[in-house]
Length: 271
View 1 (cartoon, rainbow, N blue to C red):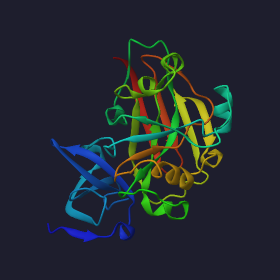
View 2: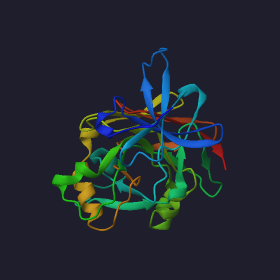
View 3: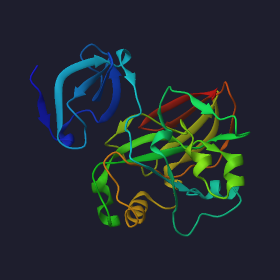
């Protein structure tokens, strides 16, 4: 079938997934309410950070394996960006955004396990809204921040809490492989000003917040970060976690759900 190209703004469905099918990895648009009543993925040629080109191939969502929706060059995370969470951690929201990096190797997909390292005695969940950057950018003013946002997804800023306290900095505590689940897909057209964010552990709600509670808003975060470093297409910003963080154990299942975006689910296993 002949490939069809069109701008993203003209695509009827706006959920972008990255997936594998028969050993091949591709991006696709998740189409809900297709002709057969099911959910299908319309395959894209190449990556979605530019004009969208459909290959004409479609797969039932049940026939593909969803992967992490992007492989970022870096994950820029924000600490203590909800007042109640800052309080539960024994402090206030910093006057300026508190940024730290998680390595690209910490990224994993919905459905994949979070590996509990034997070097830690406490590993916590932190459900967060993630911003996916759509273009190379630096020194972005707040007024133009929306121009560099590709979309949004769910994230879990998994943290070895004991090592965060003992190390005096957060690289090891937040950098283990599998400590940044992202997914299940990217929602490119959603108003994130006031969405409900919940984290459940074995089905029990542990975090229940609203994105409206974010103190340093997304435009100011983008301006602050890009004044320091260049962001590349596919880079991810984690916007902070609401109150209610707590420990996970091997055998648990943790889920982060954000209204209008999706549900990120991961089992916890022994590394």
